[in-house]
Amino acid sequence: MRVATIALFSSLVAKTEAIGFRDLVETATHRELKSNAAAVDGADDQHRRAQNNCFTDQPPSAAWHPQYSSGWTNGFCRFTVDCNSPAYTSELLCCRGAYAGQTSGTCLSSLPSPPTMSPTESGGLDVYYPDYATSWAAAGCINTRPFPGGRPTYSSQILCCKGAYGGQVSGTCLSQLPSAPTMSPTETGGLDVYYADYATSWAAAGCINTRPFPGGRPTYSSQIACCKGAYGGQTSGMCLSQLPSPPTMSPTEAGGLDVYYPDYETAFGEAGCINTRPLPNGRPSYSSQIACCRGAYAGQTSGTCLSQLPSPPTMSPTEAGGLDVYYPDYATSWAEAGCINTRPLPSGRPTYSSQIACCRGAYAGQTSGTCLSQLPSAPTMSPTEAGGLDVYYPDYATTFGEAGCINDRPLPSGRPSYSTQESCCRGAYGGQSSGRCMCEAVGVCYSCTCGTELQRTTAGCTLTCS
Image (cartoon, rainbow, N blue to C red):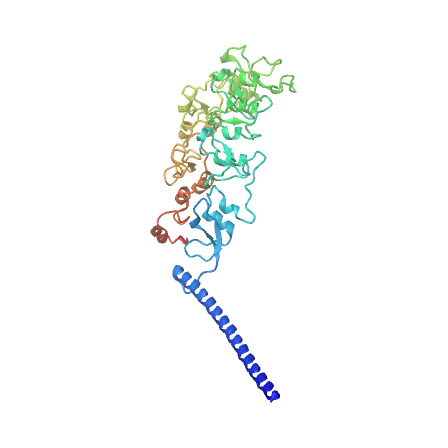
């Protein structure tokens, strides 16, 4: 009886355990199936949401998208699936494209390795940009924090000055450099270039390097080069007399000087050029006898000076009936004057072999262009197909955001010029956020900011514009 009872009890326990184990398995299986179903439902929901936004069968791949919901100042980029904002392949490109002018720097600061904008030794940025808050003539290049949006940047201060203030006649930008190039002080404290002193009468003037440099004045690499170019026929010799070391006066093979000078001791009609020692103080000198005759006795109707030459040069009339040399017209105001070959040649007037050479030598900085306009075929400034100059320059009369590059006549003094409209836009308006200049130079296919959608479509642009 006891044995039977034990056997019956053991059988009941075994059945109970089997039933419990089966229930446990069924419960676990049910939970797993439910979890998988939930996961599938979640994926389907995400898929449906993406489909609802993108109107496609499959959602796009994840990419970097700007988070517009955070506002401009606190905006950043996130790697996600988003059909309502532009996609970028990297976080850096997203920040540059969507938050290019963000002064707070929130987006860039979230990068693993933000691009360098670290302070320089003086505490500013390590890039320079033009100071548009100051008038153009008084402005320079700065690296003050924070960086304004849409402003062109340069790796050094001098590059910024050359790119943004290339035609600045005041020289303010270059003067702010630690070591200004080209226009830096020489040993005597002036510029390292020389220019003619137009403020002094021609006979009493010389070449100077006094600061500041006047706009539109031709420059020379040395004082003697300036004297030769601007005061070549100066009979007073004032310019050459101001040189630290006047040209050599060593004897020639014939026992005289190796330079010639006019004989002021003899009447003008009967005088010539000599190289007798010693050279009188303040007397202009020339490298050859013929150069002296042309410079000091060019208007001598008697021809005495030229007759003393071993081989007198031709002074026959040109086709127009004038001299075969040209000289500047000092009888007319500088801005309205040109080069002429009218007989007789005035005494002490510099001469040139051609009219264009005379204009370049005597009226190089003439902003009115009168001299060049008198040429039969004026160089460089001839009209383009559109009727303007064949160079382009930035339009400083219009605000930066709306300005472009033009070739209207005349070219303003001290304005930088470029060979093409596109190169002008890139050089002068590289940081123009509106793109107005490049749109005019390149056309509506340059960017999505150019023209209307209809115009871009008609032009066959391949741009992808949202």
